[in-house]
Image 1 (cartoon, rainbow, N blue to C red):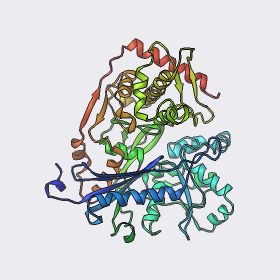
Image 2 (cartoon, helix red, strand yellow):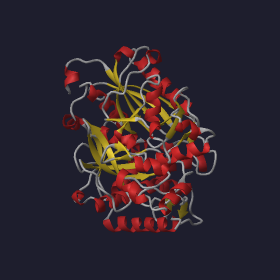
Image 3 (spheres, helix red, strand yellow):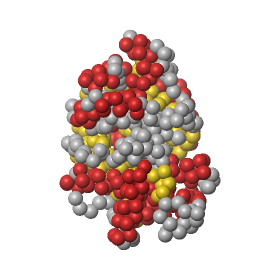
Image 4 (cartoon, rainbow, N blue to C red):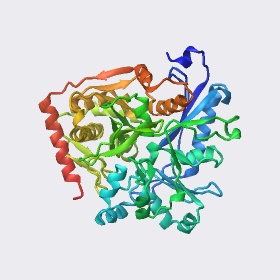
Length: 503
């Protein structure tokens, strides 16, 4: 039990978890127990093939409404010591400083509309510079080219930007601006590191990269530590002003929530996509396998770096089974259906619905099913969808082991996200990796990470080393599959991916 709990502190921390398909407010006590939860889904917009948008007002409205509902459950705003924010990361918003209104829909991280622009930048030889400074690749996934698209395609936007009237932000910045009544335009280092505009070694917005993308520096937020003062909420929003003290992109927040504070620790989050981060310590590790070098968290001005592999489709494959094929009515049915499949039927789903992420980074690849016969049916599709998550995670683990020589030896993967509730899926993951998979007691690791960063600012939670001791495992999945079977299955996956790549 930590110091705050021993002192009888009955105040709580509110985590605002603004995700890709829903907004959630989760309140934690000093022992990291969940005291209240509220969640709302919001619409997804697909105006053209490969485009994904959100209405910024939906993000704002659902965040405020879920926060109010959660606060009411614990007795009112006076019980909330601080707010932490975690967010879908690369999703891009541009708004008018004078009105606080966005000038277009938010362009979601999954959106691929800037693929031609990224291709032109690569052809011009710019990717080496971007990767050296940001740790990222020139891919539509990241925020920088999305900002340029908005400026060039929303009428009058570039003129407004040049005159200083527009602000850019990832979702955290948008929420901070609105929560503070426009007093604070800020982000944290983890979110900044996902924009293609931030030099992760120097800790500054980079003038050369801004010039290449045509983004005015005045649009950008101030970059702060992940645990810092981000202002106070407007008093009328929740009944009293509440300090905002922690911010991190969702995958980095999950890394913190999983207590991956030691070099070599690895976590993987299975939500809409799948994101694996490996803590590499105080120095950025460049990747030779098209992984990303990113900031895991930043405390007291000192960044901790990570290697990251990003998979665009994980839980979204299960949503496709439900909404696209209609073979299940609820995501929880997928594992039961997969168990009915004949394991001898080697059906592979390469879920490149919005291109392929790490380590392939093929924006033009599209999803495909391989190995179909007349006997193939819904159970095979469900099994292939769940297995695709394991195969893609192995792709990332193989690349990380190659990039980070210090990482040789046994690997234990800490997992979180909606998909980890499926024992069948987690067992296959352990089998195909040939490594143990640990599922934590506290499942809400992303929100917990944001809450921890906020509470750390107020000495509500202990320092990272002590916090790591409180992390608890609910279950460990040990690999049971033979090495020969594992390698045979994985070889089939690699062949399916090879057939799917656009070049």
